[in-house]
Image 1 (cartoon, protein in one colour):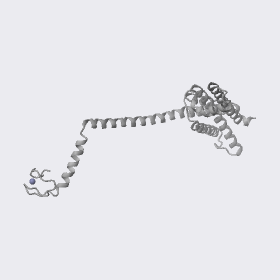
Image 2: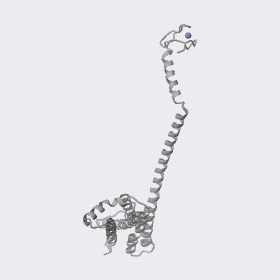
Image 3: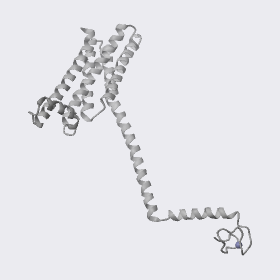
Image 4: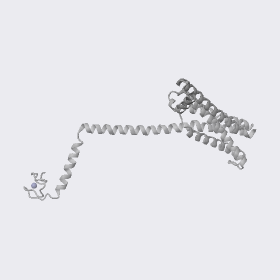
Amino acid sequence: MECVYCLSPVDENANVCKVCTRDLYLFRPLLEKVKVLESKVAEHQDPIELMARVKELEAFLVAERAQAEGKQATAWWALADIAQFIFIPLALLLLAHALVTVVYDINMLYLRIVSMVLPLPFGIYLFTTRKRSILAWFLGTAVLAAASVIGMSAITGWVDQTPVLPQSMVEWREFIEYAASITFSFLTGMLLGGMSYHRKHRVRDQKDASFLTALVAGFGKGKSSPKDIHETIKKLEEMGGSLVAAGTTAMSIYTGLKAFM
Ligand SMILES: [Zn+2]
């Protein structure tokens, strides 16, 4: 240690400088702190270590940015999907309603048929192009159906000065049936699209079928080759999908046309 006044060497534990006889007592803790800081600075002055740290921080920043952009991209995709598969069919259904009831004033049966057919291609396209969440889109179709029926009622209400929401049990039932008809049509499309997607990506999704594999292998009792089993599964899956699609189609037609039967 050096004396802070005269710079002559002083013993580490001395409180007074031997040369200038000044008191060093108050400076000692400060000097010790400086020493510690100096050693710390020296530690970080290794250029290789510094560069490594800079690289690490840069990589961290890049990763953070990519994640943020990824999140933004997902949000954009979701918005684009909602616009494409909810707002466009909704607008078309409302337009069909306006054309049938206000502009041409023709039988409501035509509107019901349009409502059964129109959502189908949207559902098919939605599920053919990418793997998507069935639950999320089921909720989406429910929103679409509800918005369509309420929107149609609002148009009628605006033209005829009638209340937008149903006024009796019969009207409520008609509301719900009509919405169900739209939902089932979209669901049928989703199923058909999903089956087509599954067929295209079968190889990649094969492990999904492991339960069915076990089941079919159990029935076959070792008589079937893996190829036979695979074929059987394919048939079973397609049969199942087609059956469900037939069911949702039937439900769409039934709920859509019930009021006219
Ligand atoms: Zn001194």
